[in-house]
Every structure is written in C-alpha cells, then in structure tokens.
Length: 138
Image (cartoon, rainbow, N blue to C red):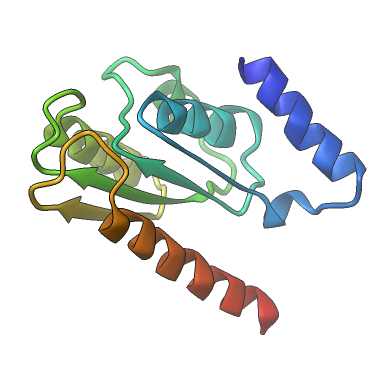
C-alpha cells in the first residue's frame, strides 16, 4: 500500500504540484500510513494529520527520525478520550515520541469521542489547515 500511495504522490509532483503543498493524512490505520509516508518516504510534504491513529512503540518511523539531518513535516493530531479501540493514551504517546524526535506537533484531545470521525475533530482540522493556507498566501 505504501508503494501505491508513494506513486500517487510522485505523480502529483510530476504533474507540477510542489511536494511542499501536499498534505498527507488519515483516520485510524490511515493515520499510521500517513505518518509512515510523511516521515519515511516523503519528508518534504507540507504536513501530516492523524485522526484517532498511533504508531506502535517499535515503529520504523521512530528509527528513521532518529537518523536526523532533515526537516520533518508538522503533525496535527486529534484523538477521542473515549476511544476504546485505539486508546487515547496511544495517540498521546505517539505525539510525545514524535515531538521528542524533533517533529513540531499539535495534539487535540476530544472529550467523550469514541473511535469515529467527529464534527469537532473535522472543524479543528479545517481551522488548522486554513491557517496553513493563509501562511502560504503571504
């Protein structure tokens, strides 16, 4: 799957889209895939968003980031406190681990949200990305 998604990103770049204007993200395991793509394969992307996702403690992402020597895409992350499938603590731990490796992160805890896409989560993501677009316009 990572190769297929890498191919899609490469095609966009070949078609004239600057990699620095591509945002990668996903929900749950899609968020995990987004972090692998952004931090291992495409570190030049604009940013990463992860909704109710995490990396396991031995993730290759952490190992790659420890190599250093490059800039990392900014991470925007939201996670429901009532998520009983992908625990909120796992999302927090992922965020903390990435921050300790030099990734600029934003983490939003959403009270009483389970393992689902919620309106408040999508609104926060939209506001965050609107601010990024405003910075691009400057």
